[in-house]
Amino acid sequence: MRESTFLADFVRNAAYRSADAIAIVSGSSILSYGELATATDAFASGLIALGLRRADRVGIYLDKRFETVIASFGAPAAGAVFVPINPLLKPSQVGYILADCNVLVLVTTGERAALLSPMLVHCSDLRHLVIIGAMPDGLSVPGVAVHTWDEVLAAAPRAPHRVIDTDMVAILYTSGSTGRPKGVVLSHRNMVAGAKSVASYLENGPQDVILAALPLSFDAGFSQLTTACHAGARVVLINYLLPMDVLNAIERERVTGLTAVPPLWIQLSQLAWPVTITEHLRYIANTGGRMPLACLSILRKQLPKTRPFLMYGLTEAFRSTCLPPEQVDRRPDSIGKAIPNAEILVLRDDGTECAADEPGELVHRGALVSMGYWNDAAKTAERYRLLPQRASGLVLPEIAVFSGDNVRRDVEGYLYFIGRRDEMIKTSGYRVSPTELEEVLYSSGLTGETAAFGVPHPILGQAIVVVVTPKDDGNWLSADALVKLCRAQLPAYMVPAHVDVRPGPLPRNPNGKIDRKTLSAEFAAHFEEGR
Image 1 (cartoon, one colour):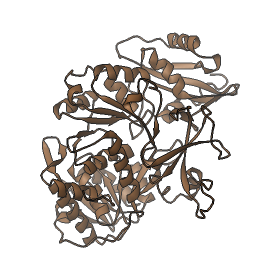
Image 2: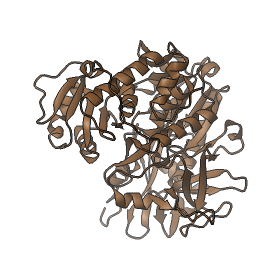
Image 3: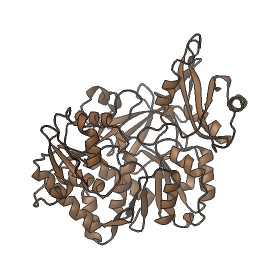
Image 4: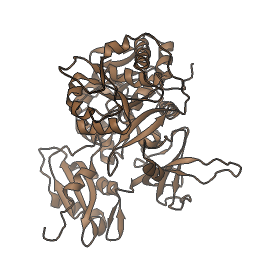
């Protein structure tokens, strides 16, 4: 088997093994690995023909389609850096990303380019627009050449720039808890090591059909492509509007693997799954936050033959931990142990290791640690820090990712997520984990989506506010009943000061997670005097 060192090697090696195997499904169309490899190399040559230099940035602002995949592998094949941009972002947000990381080439559709054009004039490094589909009338940006997708792919073959595996390959923008999104810089080594690690414990192979339900701009979303290509599996692209669209695609395409974030799992758990799905759906995987135990229980009852993988990761280190399916019954609230080729530490603020069951910060070391935040030395210094020397003879320091997440490790080495440090609620002198409070409400069986957060309070410091949706929009749900439930199961300092019941869904950030920041802003002045 050929070894993959660079991102585009996944595609080329899969094509070498089985050129006719289906790589990508989009609607009723398919693309084989041979066709994907040919198009990837053609796009790379087209970028070189445009004058692209090594490490220049290529922005990709598209929904999920063949061209998105081709450009994502083709830019690295040329020696460039790809920047996937969530298609849900608005023009001003896209403009910020393009300017922040100095994008030279932007790949998008004519319709999206027309909406972006007022922003593009502020992107001083942008030199080329590559348009997919119909060219919009009158599209013109000073200093920017406009090309069709077919023109770029028709360029004569050209040699790519030379790169090594520690060179950067991608910049993924992640929404922080405060301020503008940050561009996480990933190397070829990061992405290749991550794909190999995840594919190993998910046991991905050529027989797998993986549904790409998450945004490809999200590290876990793009991982569906890399793990599939590494294994020679098939990827089904879906741009869904409703959870039922996801369920229908799983059944129609006989999907064997699905990774999603908790808000989508909550919605899917409220649907009636066809009984035949568990016969072919080999595994489900959760990422992007803890899946409520009540939700997990419902899914396992509907999918008795499907193996659940509970994962934890962060964009800065791609993926960190996974709980094997055989441990789910014993410790369903655990995020597991470190994945292959990674080590997870639990450290105190002074850098020493925590004792068993002592809360501390999750710190990730190894090949998956990314290269820092693009053009942001201050934030990079906050998150990427030196580890104490682990061997006395070593001279060079080692950089690890300090996640900002509080966890604990039990005596058997299994990790448990407590909460993000910047989301911990500080009330009456206590620190409260929003996920712990949310779990109590989920377990009641009354709520659909649930978000707990702290807001300023003149006496308590922060007051706890909870926003919930009914499990079924037709069901009556009482805020008073939920407060009473909390009083019965929680200490007084953890009881919400205010519960807001509203129709769903709750607001999401671009990666599909419930947006606590937006919700908390609604209640920022709720406890001011006189209100």
